Length: 192
Figure 1 (cartoon, rainbow, N blue to C red):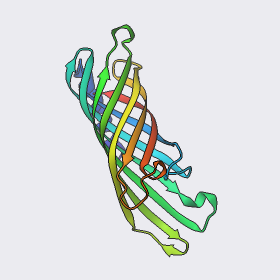
Figure 2 (cartoon, one colour; figure 1 turned 45 degrees about the vertical axis):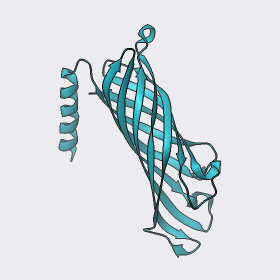
Figure 3 (cartoon, rainbow, N blue to C red; figure 1 turned 90 degrees about the horizontal axis):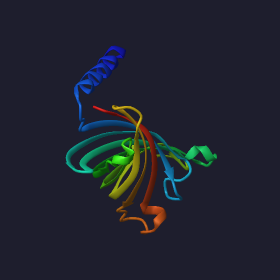
Figure 4 (spheres, one colour; figure 1 turned 135 degrees about the vertical axis):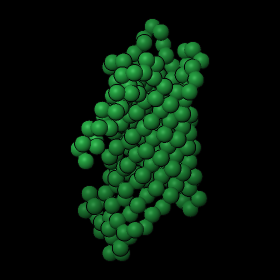
């Protein structure tokens, strides 16, 4: 396993050393739930991984597509209630984005994106004595994001971004608490 991981990193760095003007980048982010919504204070981020491809440049803007996948955990047992279950939330976010390259500040790249979010909720444990393991639910909705990336070197960057999603929830009241998902993502990336 360690050899495969090492081989993968070597392969990525080999390709990245030959690319002068990279169109691809990969990123690893830490997602943080913000705002008062159904994800609640018990939800916390595990990881968010992303891939971006910039397919055209309209100076000074680069247009591209991205795909992010993330994992959140909601542990209801943290508040010592009779609800002793764990919710693992898998998030998939395809987007179209625009990235601004400012000549006066070459290392700073503000960006914004528009896309769709798919969320899959997997339950395990018990809710008031009833086993809920294996139950799941799916929600989805349109979203947008904006943020800024800062180049540490020619290949490595750090970023912070805000993601907002308005979920389509048919079986719950259409109020902010039930339908709005707000995530703050802080991460690092590699241009390949």
